[in-house]
Length: 370
Image (cartoon, rainbow, N blue to C red; front, side, top):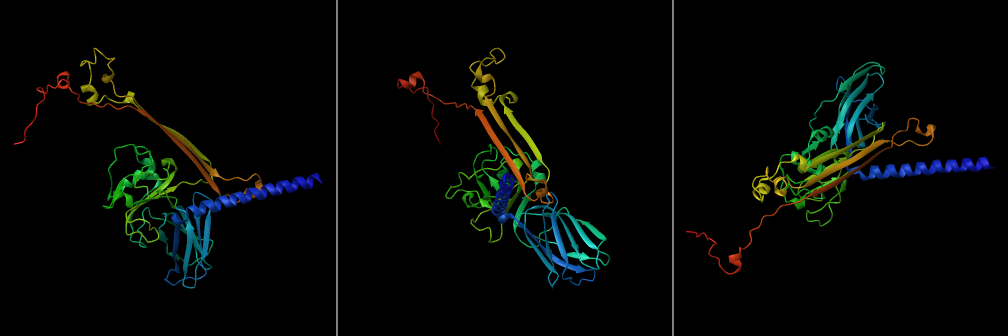
């Protein structure tokens, strides 16, 4: 009786964990649905005749995730709801060699087309092809730029806010480029001459701009190390985006992979690394700072800036080995970042002299316009 109760409890826990994982997976896939890609194309033989019934399989190279489709009577296939990333595409049909295309990159919200030509031979034979580093998108006339993960990792961004990567796209300008960009600002961008309030920012397909924000704040900011890609659409984008008459800044966050990864970092700025400013030098009480080093104006203004965080990722592993066998298709990614800043400002003002306070303004000079 005790063994039956224990078995029932174990099965219940397994069912509960499976249900929670399923709900979590559906929630994640649903939230990023609008940033998924689509792959389509024709499968033909060497003479250009279409091949119905050919099986096309696409598999993500970072995860054990894949989808498949069978070509129609017209030799056409469509595979949708594909998260952006690098994929391997294979196709096979009886009487033909197996086709294999590696390193095919799918961009968020952009449909890709791959036409496949199969050569006569045995299925056990294969023809391998490597995708081009840059593909020409013929399916849409959208004017935009995709900033990849490699570009994000190699680009220095003041404040490490991925929103400001939009400045890499021609036609995008901002009025606070030199300022720290770690806050909840939407950037104040003018995209192709549009007003900044007409732009929209998306995080994984979800609108990040608060309603009637007047371009002051967004819902939140993304960690640069947690950003997979940034897509900037400036004009002629499809009606499915909608919502705004300006530009679109779409941020896609990272997801986990089949291996565990963890990183930690800290970026430091300190007045010990800075030179004194011209304004502080001119405001020194004692002109010779070498003789009077204690004068507070002889040194740079106090400044402390610490931006630090971490991120960890990996696959979801269930507590029982037989449940994990060949089923690592659920992944997780966790990231946190903090910013601490201490600074001081120096303001110089002109005040009335003692004579001016007594009503004598003879020492005050006026310039007359001719």
